[in-house]
Amino acid sequence: MQGKTVVITGASSGIGEELAVALAERRAQLVLAARSQAELERVKQRCEQAGGRALVVPTDVGNPEDCRRLVERAVETFGGIDAFVNNAGMAMRGRFEDVTDLSIFERLMRVNYLGSVYCTHAALPHLKARRGLLVAISSLTGKNGAPTRTGYAATKHAMQGFFDSLRIELSGTGVDVLVVSPGFVTSNIRSRALGPDGSAGHADIAEEKGNRIMDTRTCADLILRAMERRERELVMMPAAKLLLALKALAPGVIDRLASRMLKQARP
Image (tube, rainbow, N blue to C red; front, side):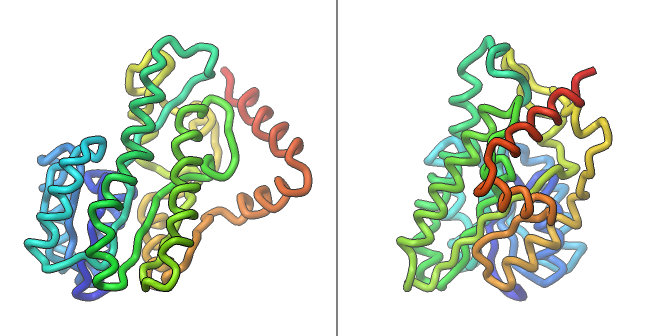
């Protein structure tokens, strides 16, 4: 990744921040995007201390004009784009029957799914020019539904379908598409999750009860390795791979396992 220009959305914390620092250690040129300029400046300092170059571009990925401006700034500063990481996202916690603010679903879709669409559309000509790499940070809930995640899982299913379809369209262009499906990761997205009433700050009870949680640096290192190998898909947890294989043979078993997790998480 040395000398390569990589754009990362959602770069102000969590997976995005640690991936940026890991790339900086490879002497990459980073374009850091998120809504908080102050947090981006902090991440920029970490990247520069790690040996990379970094440009801060405050961006709301739910705004198509912001996404276009992000790509323009990246190209103006570094001359092109070698990889674009669609990482910005919001989470949701709560049973669907308890939802009192249905606008949550639109907000989630605009950031998690449409944000990726807007950014990818703007970046694609530049990625084709350099035979670059598209990365989508999805989730295991993009592979299988999960209780209390209806809104979030729907956006990740949309991401999975979009990037799988785009990969086929881009066959022969030199542009590769990597879809990443992490499990539980220590990230601010958990603490900022939206609740049934649309308010933020709903922690994940199941995770707090002892589920295995991956730290963000380990997650970032796995993503970086998959990027360097230009893999098409990264499912991080071995157990998740087994469950996905089981889903094809006995989907009802997976539903029962997910339901059991929800019951165990209840106080």
